[in-house]
Each structure stands twice: as C-alpha cells, then as structure tokens.
Amino acid sequence: MGVYIVLIVMVGICTILFTNPYTGQLYSSYKTRTKIYYLIVFVMILLQGLRTNLVGGDLINYGYRFSEFGGMSWQSIISYNGKHEIGYIVLNKIIYMLSKGNFQVLLFVIAAFYNTSLAIFIKKNSSNYFFSLYLYIALNIFNLSMNNLRSTVALGVLYIGIPYLFKKKYVKFLLTLIIACLFHTSMACMLFFFGMVFITNKYLFASICVIFSVFLGTGFSIFSKIIQYVLPKYTSYFRVNSSGGGRNLLLFLVFLLLALLLLSKKEWWTSNKNTILLKLFICGICLQVVSLNVSFFARAVYYHLTSILFLYPELISNGRISRKSSSIFMFLIMICFMMYYIVALKGNSTMTVPYDWILNS
Image (cartoon, rainbow, N blue to C red; front, side, top):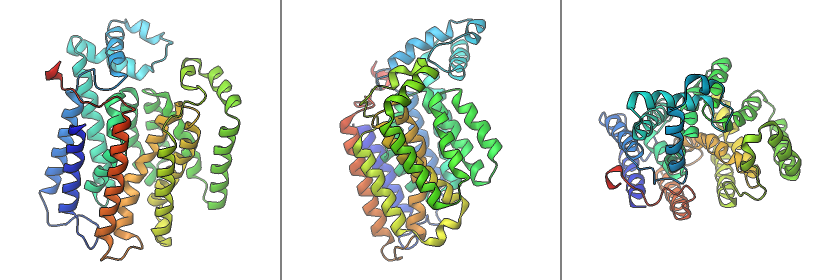
C-alpha cells in the first residue's frame, strides 16, 4: 500500500504548493510546474510498466493470453470469436512479434500510451491539472488501470475522444469510441451518455436518467437475459448481486453531485464543456446504480468518473465559495478524497496491494 500512498501524497503536496489559495488556480509564474507534472506522470508510467504479473487479480491471465495471441496466425486472429476484442488481440500479436514474447514490453507500452493520453487530456482541459491528477488517483482509477489492460487501452483512447465533444465534433468522437470498443466492449456503454448530450431540457434529462436506472434495476433479470443472448461471451459479467462497484461508491458519488450542484454558479452551466462533463457525471451515477446488480457496468462507471477530474477544480476556482475560503475548501475536498482512497485500498478489490516490482520476481 505504501507506494500508492507515497504517490498520492506527492501529488497532493504539489497541488498545495502550486495552487493560488485565493483563486484555486495554478500560479502563472511557476514555469517548473509543467516539468514536475510530467515527471510525476513518468513515475506513474514506471509504476505500471515495471510491475510484475502478480499485481492485479487479472494480470496473470493476461500473461497467458499474451503468449496465446502472440502464437496465433493472422488468419486465426481474423476468425477469432472468443471473449477478447480484436483490437487487443492485434496489439498483443504486434508486441509479441517485436519483443520476442516479452510480456513486460506489453505492460510498458500500454502504461506509456495510457498515462501520456491521460496527462495531455488533463493538462489541456483542467484549470488545475495537479488537483485533477490528485482526484484521478484518489478515485482509484489509477489502481484499476494496474489490474486491467483491455479497458485501460480503451480508456486511453476515450481521453483522446472526449475533447471532440467539447468542440461539438460528434463524428470524430464516435470514431474514437468505435476504436475504444475494439479494446473493450464495455466502452459501448458510453453511447447512453452520447445520446444524452443532445438533450437540452434538464427535466427531460433527469426523467430519462431516473427511468433508465429504475428500469434496469427492477427489470434486471429480463435485461440480463437479453444481453446474455446478444453477447453470450460476457455471461459471467451478468450475475445477480455481483455488487460491481458497491453502495459506498454510489453514496460518495451522490454526495459529490449534490455538493457540486449546490456550490456551483448558475451561469457556470452555460458552458458547453461544463454541461457535457455534468451529464457525463450523472450518467456515471446511473450506471453505478445498475452496477450494483451487473458487474459489466462497473468498468463503465469509471469511464464516466473522468468528469470529476475537471468539475471540482473548476468549482474551486469559479464556484460560490469565497476567495478567502477556496483554499480551505480545496483542502477539505482533498482530505475527503484521501479518506475514500484509503478505504478503497484496504478493500483491495483490484488486488493491486501489495505492489510488486519486476525486480522482485
């Protein structure tokens, strides 16, 4: 657990040191902060790229699959009809050929792509990228990426696609979403959010969210049978009472949403970017309600939590909090997220604690 605590404390210290206590934004005079930011990202790449296959409950299986996919012919790959997506299989095949079967190279390539995509996404779209990086770690998304490979690549692609929505380039966003689905099918859950982007009436939006959550909650058995018929290879993800994600996360997200709505300014939501991020957040909560019964949606929830990385830094700098209280409020938020992170680490649902370096194997 120590390596994760050190990482989040390090990012937390940088957040406090480089943040103007009166505006909640980064000091404009600190030219070295970008170098420190990317240095931390590089450390995250090393942590992921140099981990052994004992880090994460699924990583050993990914190692076996790497050898299997690497040994397949291209014709066999084209005709493959198993659980894994074609994009991930092709990636395994290419890395296997280039690295002569070294699974560690695959881990490092995915780590480099994912964290670089994340870093650029945050840097370009956050009002306080150190605070965003802190929230990213505290939400346990970093630990999840230590356990998963397919969904990690898919999420890295999504980081590239979301800014297209801010610019209303919907076709480009759909193309990146299709590419992401080639690495993990759960990314298709983003289609629900994409449809909600075009709903401008807030009452209609809220009604659809409630109906969606209630329908999938009460009609779970019927819904699961339909999905299992359409996607039989994902049957294991549709077990009743799978508790994907948990009620603790649901309560935490509802608390964050209420605080966001109460403390944000009305004119804040005239921004297309902020509105899209809010819709992404609310759709994530809807999926979290469903994931209490269907573990398939648990991963999709974390795709949507990306919105928090930008909404809360914006709330600190442009919310209803007074300038004198903004630094105190940010500090309280950091403590709140730290407490959640520690609880998540103790739960160890990703089986990434304790951490093992490749040098220890």
